Structures are given as structure tokens and as C-alpha cells.
Length: 444
Image (cartoon, rainbow, N blue to C red; front, side, top):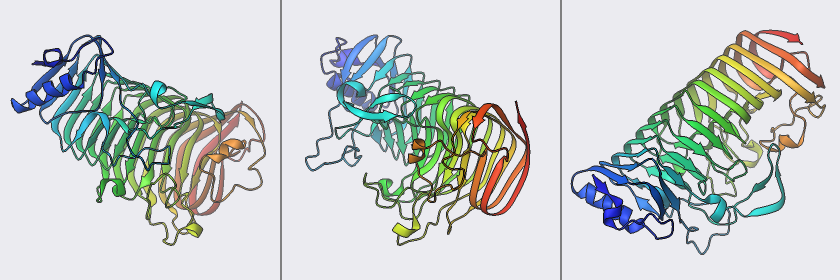
């Protein structure tokens, strides 16, 4: 047992305790591994590297408060962060058999350091929000190319950007943690699992100002191709201003063999988002060559209360891209879902990269609220990724375009206190080869 206070850490919320934390961690690693203990009290901490075979344990009443600064990059002219400078609050590269545990708290203080308000910019669900104006470190807790990492029991607050970001990792356990990021915070994803495999997420309670559970495959950032696969999330509660569960959006490596079970989503903007690729050469520095293949994933026993239940897209526009999209969605199963939504769902491939096979069973969707007529005559193509929030939305329960085969078995759609432009036809298709729609419909 190595106590950080024995190495110079001071629990006064003012003294920079980074040397004490790093000294205890390094001494523990040099001794062959063990536990670095953080007693109750508040500790100011800058970037700290965890070592192999070390468990950083926060006692009940211990609180780490970040004093991370903006990334020192003189040429940076974008608000989006870069990971090239390899900055985080706690984490490491090529770390094995390490853990962050305990009943303590870690406060990223993003609201104090990195999120000045900008008047006139509103979130459609939560009103005035914060917008980044500094070059932020990308992860509060970040592990890269690491193995056998455990994060358990701790409470995490207000990161500068992502709360937990794993890149190129294997064998990750995230269990019984609480994440609270300001619902008006910018890009504050809770869990970003990126080019990582054999990940188990269980018992987590998450409120996020962006996405809650995100699986990405950013091979360009990692520097080589590595799938995100064998990722399992279960028994979690999610609330957020963006997507409860998102797969894709950035990256070219495959995403496959993932499962999401027994999850409750309450007040999310989009329940499940699957996105093959964003626009190429995005102005935030994200490089997409052809998009990810999202295959062999299951979503079972989910309870979803969302503005929109499903949003599946191939938004990279072939007109603007010299190379065709090669990514796609295939063999995805959605079973035993209980949904309340205020807009219909969009399920859309592209003209040159169609959705392959999706299967929906026992999916019961209740639609409610006032629906306008903006998309009644024509749904835009390419579909606006986020700008659809300016309109009333999809008036069908499911709008499906550019797909090969969709199967609905024992599903239902109910209009409950729904008025305005809602359509009584549950499914609207465009360029869909086969759609077997066993969907009952009723209006309360």
C-alpha cells in the first residue's frame, strides 16, 4: 500500500499534488505493483500517468480536482482538441493490469476551465449551453494501447471533453461507476470505446451532455487498423443530450460482435445511433476514408424514452468524396424494446452503399406529441445529421431508404396523445428491396 500523502500530496484543494500522486504510482510500479491509496480530502491534480500493475484507489471522501490546462499548441486554431499531445488527467500508454477504483470522485472542472458560455447558441432540448473556446485535453481518463484495465466504483464529473476514452485497448472492465457531466457541456461523451476489444460495461449510472455509450473505430488516430469488437454493455441507466448508444460516426475499422442489454434510457435525444461515416476531411481534423462496417450486434431488453428512437445514417456524401463509401450496416438485431418517442425513426443507407439486413422483434414504439408537416412530402437526401432538429421530424414510425432487407416480427406502433401530421402508416420505404413488416398499429 502506497499512500499519496506520504509522497507529498496535500488534501487542501490548492496545492498541486501531481508530484505526490506520480511519486507514489512510480514507487508502487518499481516495487512490482500494488495499491496506491488516496485518503479522504480534496487534491488538485494535473496530468498523471498510471503504471502497469498499479491500482489507484480513492477512499470514500477522496476527491481529485483537475488543474489541467489547455493543450499547449501555439498553432491550434480550432476549438476541437487533439490527442497528438497525449494529454489526460489520469491514464497512460502501453499500460497493463492497472485499475482506478474506490468510492471517491474525480472532477474534471470542465465548466470552470474549458466551457465559457456563448450567448445565442441553444440546445434544442436544454436551452443555453456551453461551447468550447480552448484547445482541450481530449480525455479525463484515457488509456491507449493498454490491456487489462479496470475502472470501478468511482464518480466522474465534468471532463474537458470525453470522460473515459480507450483507444487501441483490450480487456477493459468498467463497472458500477457514476458519470455526471453538465447537460449543457460540449462534447462530453461519457464512455468512448475506440478501436478496443473485449470490453465489459455494467451497472453504470450516466448523465452526459453528449453521448453516453459510444463505440468508435478511429484507425487514423490510432495509426493502424484495429476493430472494435466483443463489447458488452448491460444494466446501465442513461440520460443525455445526444445519443444513448452510438456506434460509428468516426473511423474506418470494423465494429462488430457487440451487445447492449437491459439498459434504461431516460430523456435522450436519440436512443440508438448507427453512423457509417461523417463527411470526409471534416473541419475538426477527423479523417474518414471509407467508413466503418457495423455488423453482428444485438440490442435487447432496452427501455427508451427519446426524442427519436433510431437514427441510422451514411451521411458522407459521395458527391463530395472521390472514393465511394465502403462501410455498411449488416446483421443487426433489435429485440424486446419498449420505446416512447416524439419523432419517427430514420433508417437510411446511401445510393451506393445500402443497409444490408436488420431484424426487429418485439419492438413496441409509442409516438406522442405534435408532429408538423416538414417532411411529409419529401425527406431530404442526404439526411441532415443534426440539422433535422430545426424541423418537426419524421412523421412515420419508421422511414427506411436505400436498404436490402428489413424484417419486423411481432412489433407494434401506438399513437398516444399524438396529433398534427403523424402518419397512420407505420413504415415508409424508398429504394428498399425487401421489408417484411409485421407491425400492428393503433391510436389511443
